[in-house]
Image (tube, rainbow, N blue to C red; front, side, top):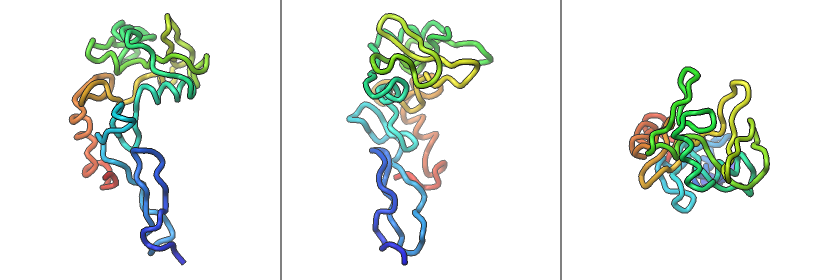
Amino acid sequence: QFKKSGSVCRAVKDECDLAEMCTGHSPSCPEDRFRVNGHPCSFGEGYCYMGTCPTRDSQCKDVFGPEATVAEASCYNVNERGKYFGYCRKEHGTYLPCKRKDKMCGKLFCSGGREMPRDGSLLFFRTCKGSFPRNGEDDLGMILDGTKCGNGMVCSRGECVQAEEVFRSTNCSAKCSGHAV
C-alpha cells in the first residue's frame, strides 16, 4: 500500500529545494524539484541556481570548514593579475586576468577556518587565503557560476553578468523538464 497523495515523499534539503509529495499511485518519489533560478536566497546574499544557493561565504565554508568566512574585498584585486594565484579563466594552460568588473568571479578568497583547504594546496597572502589544484586537477578554488557579484548580477564562466542572462540560459522550461518552480 502506498502513502497517501500529498504526503511528503522527499523533504526540503535547503532553501532552494522544494519538497516532493507522494502521488498515492506509485512506490517512488516524483523527480526532484527546486526553486526557479534567480529566487533570492541566503538573506539576499545570493540567488537560487540549479537547486543551490551559491554564495562566497558558503563556498569558503565548503573549502575551509564551518568557521571560514569570505576574505576582505581587497583580496579579490589579485584576480586582475592573471597568475595561478589570481585569475578569472584558464584557456589552453594560460591564466587569464579578470577585468576589474569581474574580479569577484575569479579565485575564491577566504579568512579563518581550517589551516589547509579541503582539496588542493594552500594559497596565502596578507589575510587572504585560497586554494589551487595539484597536478592538473580541476581548480575547486574558483567562485561558482550563479554566485551573486552585484545587484542583479551573477558570476558566469569568470565574468560578472546580468543575472537574467544566466537564468534565461538555464530556463527551466527548456532545460529542467519542468522540475523548477
